[in-house]
Length: 160
Image (cartoon, rainbow, N blue to C red; front, side):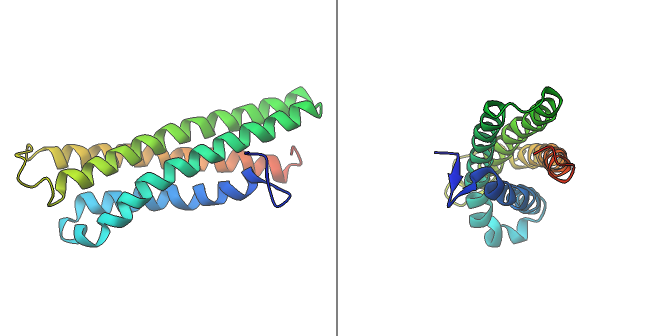
């Protein structure tokens, strides 16, 4: 399922979406938290990105594991497989940070929405969630860079 799409490795196609969606989610979720007057414009975008981004990151991780399995079966040298394993480790961590960011962003949107306005939620909850979003966004952005950089180096150095 995660091997190919139209003859191309699925991983190569999906990673580009991750590189775009994670920074977009980070930017929009932080803006949503710190710019209350823009919330009505950003709420659906943040909610959609909060669901889609971790899903796409998961597909990138799964398709990467499939590609790694293919390369192992082809008998790739151990030093190259070690680089691939490091890249995969970054990708796994990125998935978890994007999932955490997505959950925190959804909770932030829900805690400030008009649907829960009368539920007597603590006033400090959106502030705490905004801080959580900012921290998780920072880590997610770092891991987008680390994962993308290690993958690009492997391609340009002829490892894969």
